Image (spheres, one colour):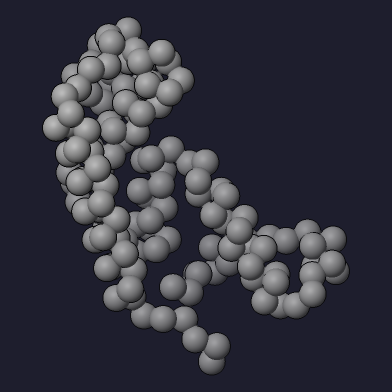
Length: 134
């Protein structure tokens, strides 16, 4: 996908990166790496918007609802001693401070959902027109 004018202006390299780069291809690689790092630190909602607006990938309503919830569960398990925080409470049936519990089948369902979503996004991406050098 070729960036539009606004998107192209948002991609910057420093003068130092420019003069130290070995080639145009290396500069492009640096810009791509910056973009990936930027995307990886977005919220799930912002990641979904990025994929739709920048990459033209369509997410199902179920994915838009479930992925933030699953991500919130993961974050609370990892960073909040397994207790629901305000953000998770706002997008799920948990209340603030509730212990997060689920059955093995639910964990399996999370994995199936993510695999299915990944397969669909990859399929959509592969069907997009390819960028060529002229």
